[in-house]
Image 1 (cartoon, one colour):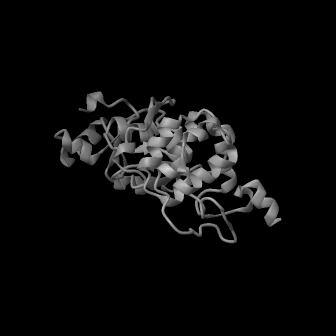
Image 2 (cartoon, one colour):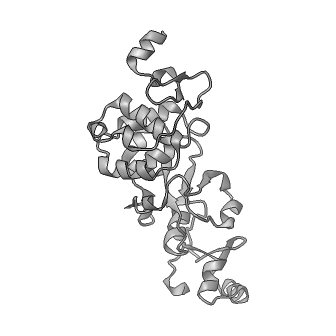
Length: 254
């Protein structure tokens, strides 16, 4: 099995065991230089210039060596797919991973704070195929499509993402595909995310907006308080900052 793992790639204990490599045998591989330990439960094929903190290498190994269901999503997926110029750089960028079960060794990595681990509960199973392979220096990475990623980003509001950043990304979504958005909205389980999506979509008025009817989706009932000191949107009954209110309402509120 190890012959198929490229130098620098990572492999964990469960993957080794699935291929008949016991812990005792793994230690023998370490002694012989075929493996080197990274953290408990995780090993690397030795490489002179290997960078254990390279998150793209970690994700590439997760997806293509260890066969985890991890998908790069949200803000990270948008950055990788050409939206980086809409997203201001931060000193310690988070890596958003979505999956059914994340390996415990991720929490033992030196740069554990970089990884924001999400479940897949934002969508039902029909959204699983809404992914795409995106090139990276270490090989293609499985990522959420931009249409799925923006919904994942909306789910981060208001605590883990800013309205301004989401608003800026929405500005760049002119080429989003309405059929894909329709499918994702139908499978989205979050009333908050669906209402916020239409708030932003109405504000920006991209051509695809006219192909999406809010009445076709379950937007729940009753008002939803989300932002402190926010204003309730007249159509979607969710509290939002003043800059997201329809222009007529914003002028009236002023």
